[in-house]
Length: 283
Length: 321
Image 1 (cartoon, rainbow over the protein chains, first blue to last red):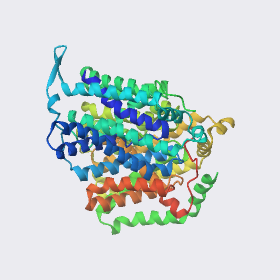
Image 2 (cartoon, one colour):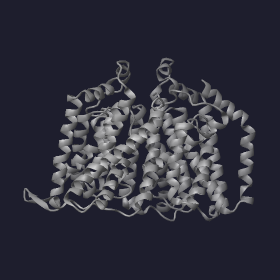
Image 3 (cartoon, each protein chain N blue to C red):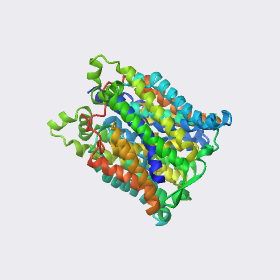
């Protein structure tokens, strides 16, 4: 069960990464950093908002918005300048951003670990199949699939979603048809950042909010996205579940090699189907 | 073919420069305090690492995100042989690139089948596996604690002696790498980078050339790793971590990936800068490093050597595999 909720959180982060890649063709290595910033903003917001039951929910709403703004600034200020260059340059640029954001977080929030208290209503645990299960995880198990459904509706039932899907197939054609692709890039990047921030904010009460959490989540989200297929929405979902379960069972069965399992799975997928389980081969 | 010509002419016109640098490095121990000799030793080691890496990136058009794996394989091989088997230093140093090359051959066999972003990712995945194995295999590698007390024999223990030793080994490796870049193999590799399909038409086995470059690059990264192991006196799993993989990338990028000597110049700038900044504000070093990466990519795409030489980064370079 906890494997499922870990998988759900992973899904939120990796679907944003996958979305950004699908449209802009940028593998955003700073995505883990966005997740971290979401968690830290959550810490600050919960601290500063008055101690009322609604404060937690308001923070959960606001923290991802802050991350989305950050994403927007980065897209417009930096990434937009280099879309036409070698994709590897973009990759390296987002790596540079990891370092910058990591240090800024250190300067703003200091080196100590932080924690976010769970809201009172969800502080306890419930029994499921006779096993105690933290009730906050139930919130994760409800909210993340809700987001997944909302995303599905957004992508497959709205005009904007149609444009996004079109952009993942053929951006030039979309531009030729009169769509403002540059604006779409920005929107997608902001939205993807929001998802990372939401993942971070939602995860904050379940983990120690610490420097370095960006690297952990980045590598795992990366594996998820590669396994599921870059740019594939359903792929991220399946990949996240697979990885979430593999991690929690892997730790039970082969504690020493659970991470090796993860990367071995990724290597096998890359060798057999380089574009991922549900991705599309490169044109 | 502008790049090929540029690399060749740089070597010629820069011959006097190279001589000057060699003389300066040779007399350095007479005038510099030992701290700076250590800094120079580190520069030489990371310069070799970045030059080996750049054989792939600059000349082969393949960007590896997992080169730390081969650096660590070299470092651990040398450290383990000396510490656990009592093998003499030179034999350990000779074994390091062999093991690193074996690793590069095993992983590279799969990695070179992919291209672009996927190439980078698979190399990263393999490097993470190497990292985890080193991290978890406590009985052999010491896990998180690393292997301590891996010092060279007393003859080489002083900073000046190890400095000369490193300089000679690195110098020989750089000469070898330069010869490789200038050989028919090197030209074939550049042809593969520029246009793999055309290269195939004229009878070049693209994958085999890429794999060979990968193995060579891995082997020299292993040499750098083993030199660093004895310089540092200890080895740690961090050597294989992905942040280490970005080091040669940043260094090569700083110096300019389109020239053979770019990464060496980059190593110089990188280390001096790291020293200047982390001496006073250690916290800010990653910020500055990240900032430099961002600025170099957005403003100075051909690195600082490119700035001096006035050559521009060509659109659609490298990465077409």
